[in-house]
Figure 1 (cartoon, rainbow, N blue to C red):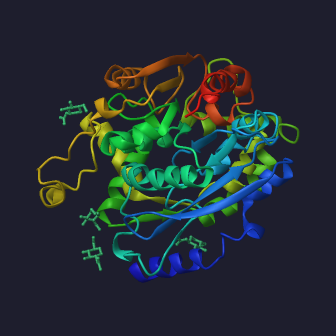
Figure 2: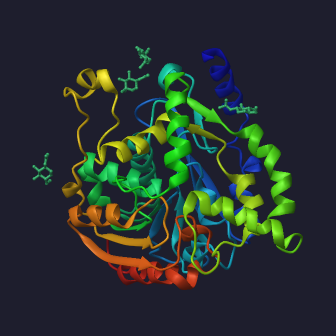
Figure 3: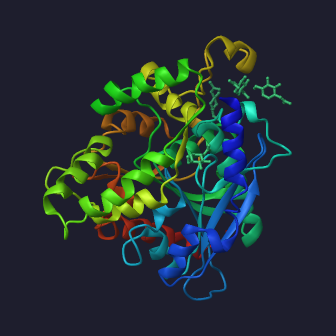
Length: 392
Ligand SMILES: *[C@@H]1O[C@H](CO)[C@@H](O)[C@H](O)[C@H]1NC(C)=O
Ligand SMILES: *[C@@H]1O[C@H](CO)[C@@H](O)[C@H](O)[C@H]1NC(C)=O
Ligand SMILES: *[C@@H]1O[C@H](CO)[C@@H](O)[C@H](O)[C@H]1NC(C)=O
Ligand SMILES: *[C@@H]1O[C@H](CO)[C@@H](O)[C@H](O)[C@H]1NC(C)=O
C-alpha cells in the first residue's frame, strides 16, 4: 500500500505541473483574455509545495491592492474562474484593477512534494488545520512579499473559510495582514449538518477508510470515466431530461434550490476536468469529527492526543482571536453549512462587519451560480473598493 502511494506521489510530482505550458488554470486565464502567472511556495511543516495563480489587473495602476482567493474541499483555484469572463469573481476583480491571487491547498492538483523534505508516512496526515496554518499562511506571506504590500483582502469559500478561521485563531499575528475577510458559506461548527447523504453514506465510508488506514482517496480513474458522459448528459442543449439528473447530483451534495438551479449544468464537464483528483481521508474526517462532537477543535488523534496536544481531548479553536474584519455570505439552502451552526460561529466572531443571507442559494452556488455577480459579487467588490485607496 505504502509503496503504491509513494510511487503515486513520485508520478505526480515528476509531471512538471509547475511549467506554464502545462497548467490548466493558466490556460483558462489566457483563453479568457487575461494575463496570468503561477508561483510556488514551500510550506513549513512537511515538504508540501503549493502553487498560487495570479490574474494581473486589467490596467496598470500605481496602487493596486492584492486580493487572495481560497477554494474549498476537493477543488482548487479554478473555482474563481470556472464560470468564465463575465461571471467569475476572479475576472470581476481583475477588471476592477485588483491584483488577483488564487491559492491552492496541499493535496490538490496544483501541489507537489519536495522529496528532500517530505516524510512520506505522514504526508496525507492533514486537514483544514494544516491547510490554514501552513498553506494559507505561506501563500499570504508570499503574496505580500511579491507585491510589497503589508496587507491584503481575503476571500474564501467553504473549506477556504475553515482554513482561514484555523489560521487566525492559532496564529493571531496573521489578523494584521488582512484588511477584510469575505467568507462564502463559512464552515466551522457542524453540529446541525443537514446533509442526509453525507450522514448516511460519507460518514460510514470514511469510517471504513480510517479502519483500513487509507491515507487518501484517488478519484482520477472514476472522474476520467465520468467526464465524457457528463459532456453529453449535463448539456441542456443536447439533453434537457438528463440535465435534471446532473442537477440532482449537485443538489445531493450542496442543497436543493427551491425555484430553479443557479448552476448552468453545462459547466459540470469543465468542473470535472479541472477538479482536484485526490482527497486526504483526514481532511474529510476532521469535518465529520466536528459533526459528531458538535465542537470546533483541532483534529482528534484519539489515544495520541496526549502526546500531540498534552491533553486527552483536542483543543478548541479560540475564535475570539479572530479580530480581522469579517464579511459573511450564507445561503438558505446550504446542505453543508446550517443556519444554526453559522449563527453560532457569528456569535463568537468578535468583528463581523456584514452578515448577508442569500435566499435560494445552496453551498455550490456561491462560485458556480450563473447570477452570482448580481446576487453578491458586486457587494464584495463594493466593500473591497471602499477600503482600497487607503494606505495600508
Ligand atoms: C491517482 O491515479 C492516477 C491514475 O490511476 C495516477 O496517475 C496518479 O498518480 C494517482 N495519484 C496519486 C497521488 O497516487
Ligand atoms: C515520519 O513520520 C512518522 C509518523 O508521523 C514518524 O513516526 C517518523 O518519525 C517521521 N520520520 C522522520 C524522519 O521525521
Ligand atoms: C499525524 O501528525 C501528527 C502531528 O504531526 C503526528 O503526531 C501523528 O503521529 C501523525 N499520524 C500519523 C498516522 O502519521
Ligand atoms: C481566547 O482568546 C482570548 C482573546 O485573545 C483570550 O482572552 C482568552 O483567554 C482565550 N481563551 C482561551 C481558552 O485560551
